[in-house]
Figure 1 (spheres, rainbow, N blue to C red):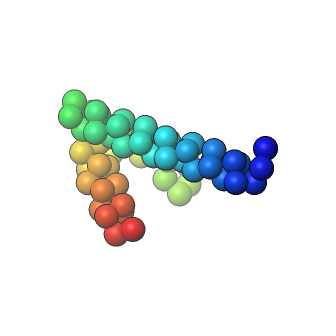
Figure 2: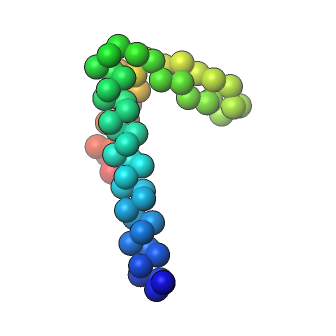
Length: 63
């Protein structure tokens, strides 16, 4: 496998993971559910999915 093929596969995987996470956020927000994240100390942090989606969209719009 060439280096370019490895790069292409990595990009496809990253794109798929990003899309999957976005779909999960949108689905949970639509259902009024929460998301569980780990904070900087590894402790669970529960956040409404709608809030997490807003933050996610803000962080991606500035890119």
